[in-house]
Length: 153
Image 1: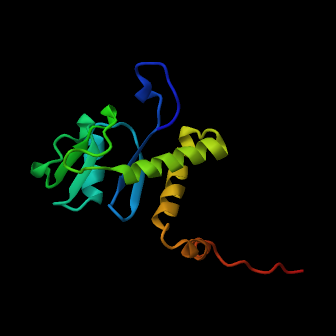
Image 2: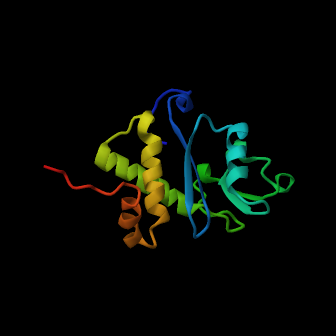
Image 3: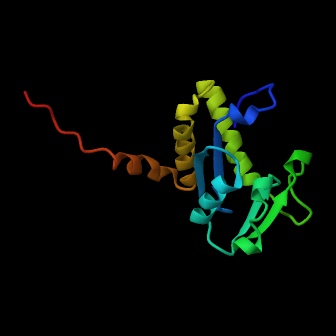
């Protein structure tokens, strides 16, 4: 995520935010060390129920998610500017989330250090997951803090 690089090993210079979204439901984000199968599969297994249909891009790390892993895997070739596959597979909803996250960082903060990128992603995840009930956000956040006590004296 984020930033332009001119080198071939751009992936070593980036902080990778991995995200999954339930169609019409909630979103989960997490900072990961790399985009390799041994890194991503445990996160997928811990988050996604077996026999779920999973839509991804054509990153080779996702190969093997099919029936032998307990999922129905379909992919979209976004590198070829394919936004919907011939089988009606799409992941436009999570792409919209990434666009909003990147635009907010670029517009408000200009850039975010890798140290804090996970926190920004979690904040946006929180807001996204409450998009259908924004009135609940403030009361829910306030329950996290202890009550204020009046000063004496």
